[in-house]
Amino acid sequence: MNRDTPIRSLPADERPRESLLSAGPVALSDRELLALMLGTGPVGEGVMALSSRVLEELGGVAGLGRAGPARLMSIRGLGPGRAATLSAALELGRRVLAGDAAQGQPIRGPADLANHLLAALGGENREVLGAFLLDVRMRLLGFRRVSRGTVSSTPASAREVFSRVVDSPAAALILAHNHPSGDPTPSREDVEVTRRLVEAGRALEIPVLDHLILGGERIVSLRESGMIPA
Image 1: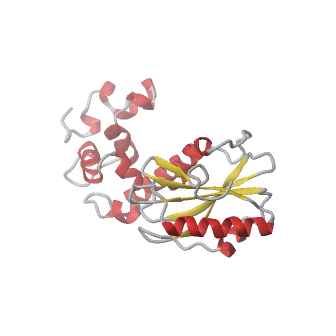
Image 2: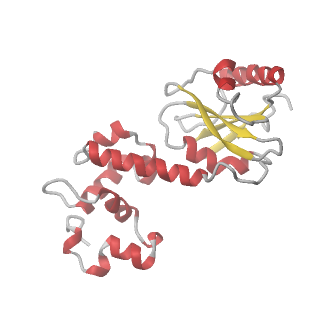
Image 3: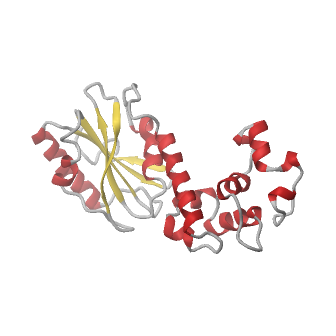
């Protein structure tokens, strides 16, 4: 298939929409899925060519997932409308991946939250601090964002964290934030802030069970690393 060929000029069995409807979305390439979301290309460029170029400029689907609206709009051919459509589709995908807030299964460790954490923070290009809310049976109630910082830090105070959960039935928290650098190694500040929040949680009788740090697709647990008391 020539990357500049308009979708409507392709044989019916080679068109992404027809392929998706007949064989399912897994049968489509990244470029074809993106082309379906974009719908059309700009004047003088077919949507398949635009899709290829977007993926090349962003470094594939991983880069696409990290790109915010401003970055998308900076790509030639992606105006506000297409950028908004892509951003909405990506966010919806993250929410689907995170799943229903009431999962019903107890959270036994970081591995049980891996998909939820990737869905919540995997596409962020700034540090974001949030908290997973757990009920008395350690079942996931949901995820709440607390603050958004810079590429290398995010503010965190006990007031900010616990004010987000006082109106919920949460019996415990697991903190989480991302490192946009891709390195999940905890900083000294990460450890110090976590220890302060653990103490605050004890005083409020809402225990902070762990702090997870996401870097790329790797996750570090401060509890498992022995950086906060058991």
